[in-house]
Structures are given as structure tokens and as C-alpha cells.
Length: 80
Image (tube, rainbow, N blue to C red; front, top):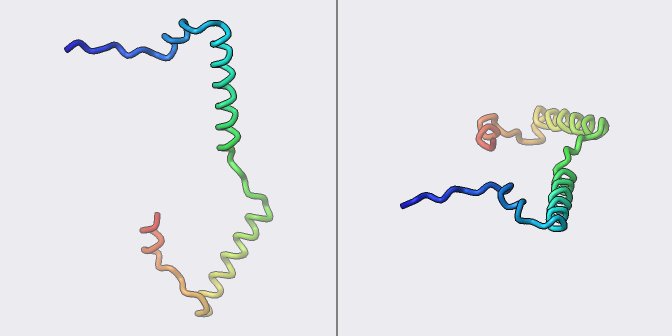
């Protein structure tokens, strides 16, 4: 059985008219921009970081005081 040669996307570009090529390029650019916008890293603010640290210390204090049950390290590792 003869194997078919796989065609690259660039093989098809030559078959597009100039107008179709421009539309395709616009679509690719728009799609890339939307993907980048949707996947931007959202960095926490300094206040959010400090609030998270404060909450962690408060939870540790409650665990030490016996008011909150801690999670064993093995259980935490299994969740990962």
C-alpha cells in the first residue's frame, strides 16, 4: 500500500486568492490575540498575597489551639 505524503498547511496557502489569504491571516491574528488575552497571567496584588499569608497563619493558630483540624501531610501530597 502506498503511503500518502502529508501536506503542510503552507501547501494550501498557494491555492488561496489574495483576498482569502488576507481573511485567513486576519482570522489567525484575531484568534491568537483572543487566546493570549484569555491566557494572560493574572498576578495577585501585594494586598492579596499578604491577606493569603495572614489567613494561613490564622489557620495554623487555630490548628495549634485545637479549634481546627489539620490535614496530614500525606493526604496533601496525595491530592497533588
